[in-house]
Length: 206
Image (cartoon, rainbow, N blue to C red):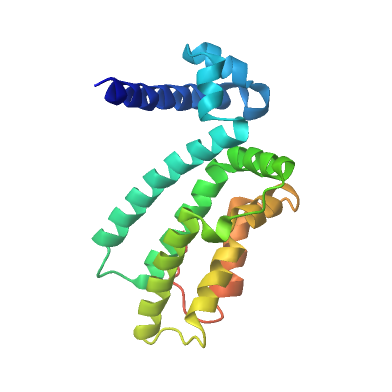
């Protein structure tokens, strides 16, 4: 019973810490909130916080993971409902929703990148759960589009990787923050460069 109670306490502490951090980050900005402030506001000891999260990069990673699971659940439900619909429209929806999520999480992703650099950690995007999920989803939709005779690809796997590389968090943030493109700019250029040369898109892209 004692082990079970400790495990439940850990779960509750994690939930409390994440909820507190989310509120503080939204209110003050990630850079303006310290780990000590998170612990104090959540009502947990610094030791409890640091046992779970070594720094804000680790904490933001957990927040991103939580948001991704919600995204995955919603997108899977949409694809199930639209199983017999246009695979082109589904592909556009998948791309837009993924970019929406990256845009929403951009400040957290930037913090994660910064801490990864400090720790000398290399990027693991191509082996991450979001990448694997998006790869399977986009690959499946492109395969269906090809089956319907709307597109002809010489290498479906390579094309899927190229699609994902073009909307990867690193590349997206670079285009948004360094190049000054808007979210719609990026999607429009993605469509014109990677979709329109191969398939005829629906008139209503958005």
